[in-house]
Amino acid sequence: MNDPAVEAPVRRSPLLNRPGAVEDVGTDAGVAAHYGDPHREQRVLEEGLACVDLSNRGVLTITGPDRLSWLHSLTTQMLTNLPARTSAETLILSPKGHIEHALHVVDDGENTLWMTTEPNAVPAVMEWLNKMRFMLRVEITDVTDDYAVLGEPMGAESVAGESMAWVDAWPRIVGDSVAYGPSEAEHPAAGRMWRELIVAREQLEQAVGERPLAGLWAAEALRIEAYRPRVGVDTDHRTIPHELDWLRTAVHLHKGCYRGQETVARVHNLGRPPRRLVFLHLDGSGHTLPDAGAELTSGDRTIGRLTTVARHHTDGPIALAVVKRNLDPELELLSDATSAAQTVIVTP
Image 1: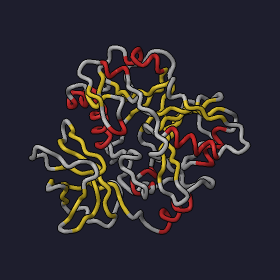
Image 2 (image 1 turned 45 degrees about the vertical axis):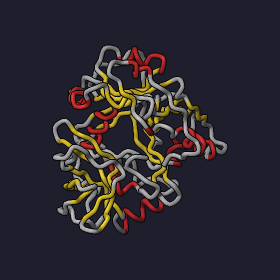
Image 3 (image 1 turned 135 degrees about the vertical axis):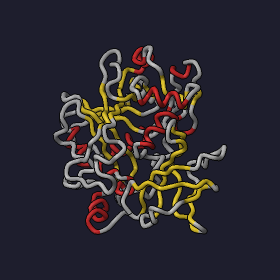
Image 4 (image 1 turned 180 degrees about the vertical axis):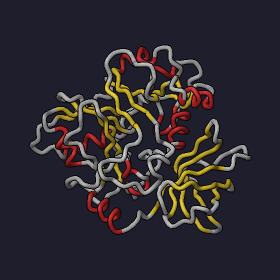
């Protein structure tokens, strides 16, 4: 989780000056929630014609000859031989194996690894990484003032100038990792090709050019549809990678020691995670939907909470939620009197 005591300043994107732009709030303040028509923005984004302003994300660089082996020793991913311009997802865990940060990384193959983080996470990530430098040949720099992030489906028109890209492409089982949820072929993210482009902040508007913009509401709806978790949104201080199916993309089960590895190995080898992420179809007959964070109940029992809620342009109201692992997948749930039907992501 992001440390509220060390928050980064909110940077208002120049793309908020585009017609119809409505600024998001909370964690995603500074960029547009939508540009007037979230459902149309979803469709255009799915078609690969639009891009999303993610310039509120943090951007770090790590330079020096030890950068890959050093980050490999600290996080969950196999990074020692990461090929140039090939991206990876990795997690920083607490000593007890709880997720603290999710990092998207890509190396230029020369002397620089680029990393993007959740909004407001840079101060905490910087502070921890600097504590772990010791005598190694690495230098960590916050370049968020100079570089911004755009999100788009793969295959979209190239942006102007040079850029580095983190790619979220499927299938993506890491090493010998085992997914608790659907197989690669059955996963709704199969074939999903999404990337984050890191561009010079001063060239942000030029990079977008004449392409349509989609807001974060559209991007979040497509993320929920693909079962993709987001740290700080679908996680809390107790979340371990197994609960959100993050073993599939961000954890290598056969690498050297790192902080939190003992919990990862124990839960994987001896048991199941205490909770599990589920996809929910919500009853859309009412005018309002429950908010993220609302309790999920079955009868008089509270069995979990909603983490992310959205209106999808074809599926209607959808959500991600975290529930008790042994909950019957066929059980219909309620949240603020709204019924919710489960789809399994992490096997009970």
